[in-house]
Image 1 (cartoon, rainbow, N blue to C red):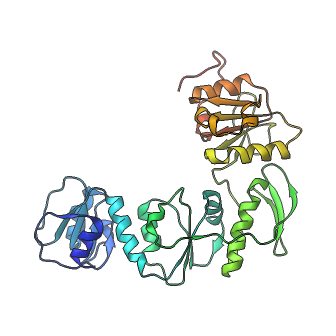
Image 2 (cartoon, one colour):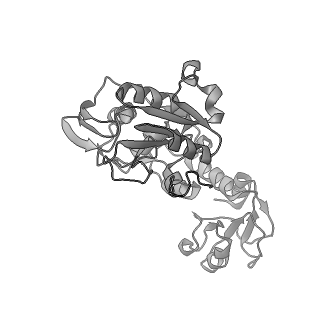
Length: 337
């Protein structure tokens, strides 16, 4: 890449007059730098090593001492934004298909073994750059706008509409599913039936695009995550307690998960603990539910759990890290965070 193109793409300022005018590769790990590379200085302490290894240019966003006036020193406002612009430029001439999906479908895709020409995109901008910088023509990329900026791509497609139901559920609990897909039986997958429509949509995409894949044992995906506890809210092994806390970080899934629980666990006492900021967005009927509680801080979550009788508690907007400290002590019932 030519120096002038690099400056234009990164919106960078050239702070010296270098002898170099081209760069071969974009690198942000000093040990991987080779002669002619452009070094993105996420670790400013590694600049000296990058220059020693042969970097022809350094892109930085913090005060930096120029140690070699022959190479290019490029100052930008934000390194992540600069790297995004460089990656977008790299992808313009690639013949790839990019599909947008919600974060549940993406996290399910990350647990399925696929061909190398299918990329479920995740991670920080450095991980994304590594995944996409050498992508082959004809590859397919799946990403979630909730996790990755759509500004990276110029042409984004929506997922194809679902084909007729293809997953045959044989047995289910609230948090496990045994099912048949393509005449293969998958027994006691740690995947709630709540996720089956999302999985079907993903598998439908694979079928349509003729992408080979292999399902393996699923693990929790940070949505609708069940934590079994005793009466003192101490964590127990999966399925060994009648009291279950269900954590959901995404507030957009509140109503869907409440409806699912009401339909699938008619026998159970269920409470719903939801951020106060979501109150106005819920439908009127749900707002009046006596089992719905709103919280403004984590202490109010704790207090509600301690004061309520229930089998299941759906807790929205936080994760299970609130259980790192015990909810109940012998000497006092409430804890300060």
